[in-house]
Image 1 (cartoon, rainbow, N blue to C red):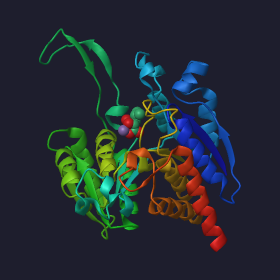
Image 2: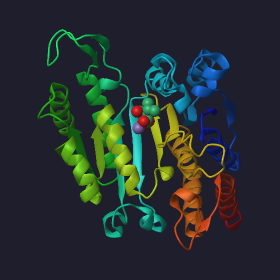
Image 3: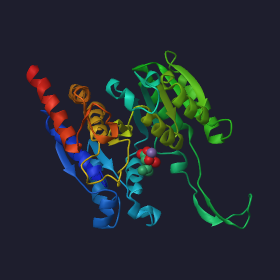
Image 4: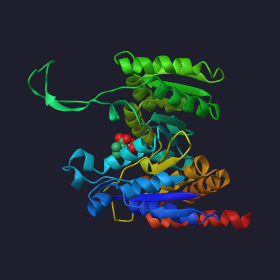
Length: 362
Ligand code: IPM
Ligand code: MN
């Protein structure tokens, strides 16, 4: 089993180090190889996704990714910005299915911005299409506006587009995931305005017919945003396009208390996957040893389950995370009165200790 380790920028290096430590504490044989990505790769090689990094990613069974980006790269041409590394990996490896679970741990109910009764027991799964939509649609660019409200003015444009097979395959992923949990899929669209999302809705309805045991409903994205903060527990699996999924998954993240807790998986058709925390590189706290490594550690657990076929090792990591939370250990993002504030490394050590304790007890 070969894992490409791509820590990236900002807190990426700190949090990935903890996840690697956790993986090494398992009694499994992995080959792990690291490479630069994002701003770090740009600084060293002049490109955010160097050929060597892409090659390593292609050759690996799974990729453990930290985060990319820093304000200092904001003035670079778009193709050289750190974000292009993650977009390039998604596109080049065909990682079209993005799983973003939002689970509210009992111990963190108080850290949510919503009332405890709204989030206690929350367990929803956002499935975001990741290689299409306005993120990748052509044409895009800048020009002199040929028409519209200000003909002749400087204009920028992007193209929202989806093909039927792209919608079908993410639909199947969502229905199959729902089968293994609450058996409900909410497809989020903007069919009342956008042609792209009328096709989305039509295709989801057709795919849904192949899963009579799974209930399907449709929701406009504006309403979905409202329902997520009004009654989030009403959702089970949410499936949506690239851009709506980007936005809704950040909103869902906050329901759980901290985006520092949320893992994610991005899979292609052969279950090769990229695993990364849902949060970014947080340059404001980079290098301070205070970032929460749990999202990355939980991403490593998802990697074991989805790409490396080691479900019991994944369980071990997840229950160790639960037990360090139960012991009251908190990084600053999830800290509250009466709990024990720890740093990145201490949190990783505590997870490793909790895993080891489980083993000796049998
Ligand atoms: C995410 C991020 C990325 C995205 C950026 C960094 C390109 O926000 O993974 O959600 O928009 O997809
Ligand atoms: Mn995002």
